[in-house]
Image 1: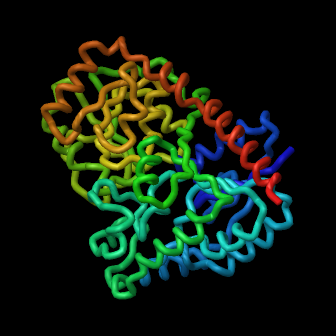
Image 2 (image 1 turned 90 degrees about the vertical axis):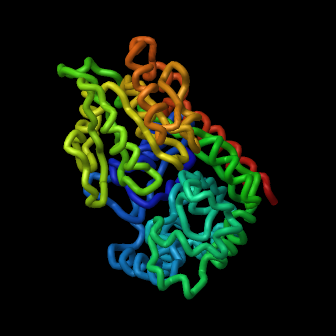
Length: 400
């Protein structure tokens, strides 16, 4: 069997990218591919085979990133050690996911890639590779990558840096290195998880060598169950961190417009913000069974986010049988059909209230789980990636 190496930041089971990689590892075997998984941070129950560096490397990298605004340009020693180790593993293809997260020195990696005959696929799950700093920029109305060279407004955007870092002016250099070492490398095929993100990549002028392969979901795990007994109509809002572009204020405002039989559950880190008494708050859920229980005890999911590049929680909810209402922004409209839910301006309370009433009035007509299974199952994703792996492997092999 041919061997693919997956690289990503973490193997935490509650991480959306980890679940995508797990789906790929489980599904590509029938196409003749075995896999190895390398991460920067490993959890006790994680599935990674290789851990790059150690906690000290990560802390030093994070400090350097905060001081100098140079995420991805530290951990040089551990990156060299990693390259040395994989050079002995007879890897046929490398599939990179997230490189940010304080664990990789990407200039070292891509200088090696340029000399190597190993085909490389990079899946963009966010926009970090396109910018001089941010993993998301759409909500700020930035003209990327041009605005990045002088931007001073986004130091509180992940990956965070302290304001003092602006005196070093590294954003222009970050962009130069990414363009020169990554986007101008002919051995790399870029993949985006949505057509919206693909269009954003092309608009930057960095590359047009990019295709879309939507994320997939394990519909055997995320599937409808008999609704748990309970009264009323339960509405779910869920994300890992309620950053500004996730629009927590829209949730709070909507809580003022609930019908008497409606309740809200909000899941995720709210950074100490105060919530109204009629919003039930749950911290992040890492256990998959607890997450499934949560989906199956609710009737509707709403995502008010401004800048999603895909929307895995939306897809998970649909696969579990929940109709969804999503904001008409970024990639969210791309994954919702008329049979799965509605698209609206979730910042407009009249429009959001009307959307919820519309779903409730004809609830039985929505078949989100059928749509998720037919359009976004992990088997569809695996087949598309396996075809890409085959094409990349043989194209590189034919080169002199």
